[in-house]
Image 1 (cartoon, rainbow, N blue to C red):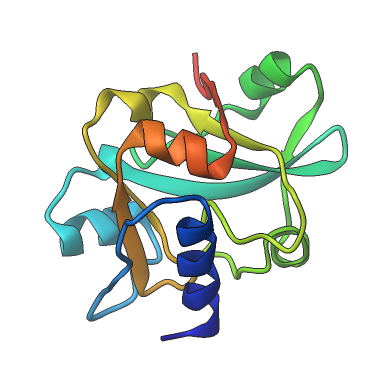
Image 2: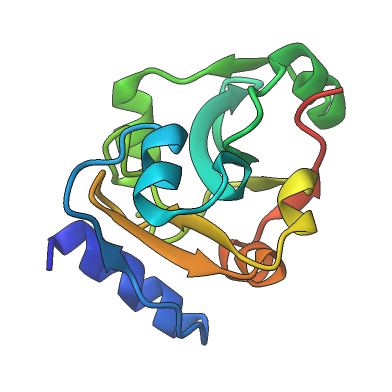
Length: 154
């Protein structure tokens, strides 16, 4: 198991979550790739996107069917929101773009969860690499990530 995935599993277990990480046969660098490989809808993929809000990194877990409206999200967070660069993503999360998990960060990070994910019984989140994901109930995702539900698009 990749060290990043081990870190995700350890964080899930520490939070009392028994979700199992699945390793895919090919990389899932996009929500569409992940959905196709898992046999689920794109909307059930919880994209892990790092932005800066007021200059500080935040993680936004959004439905694969959405694009985050940064102006709209900025109004919700009362701070200007911009997409983070790869260096900021790695520094804030410890993961590379394409494998950012919702847990297992080197230091606490504000997490916001797209309210539309809450409509599903199960969603899939990244497991630390582009080859790994895990299924989880959306309410459990909010709990283990310490996330705050928020609308990410009007």
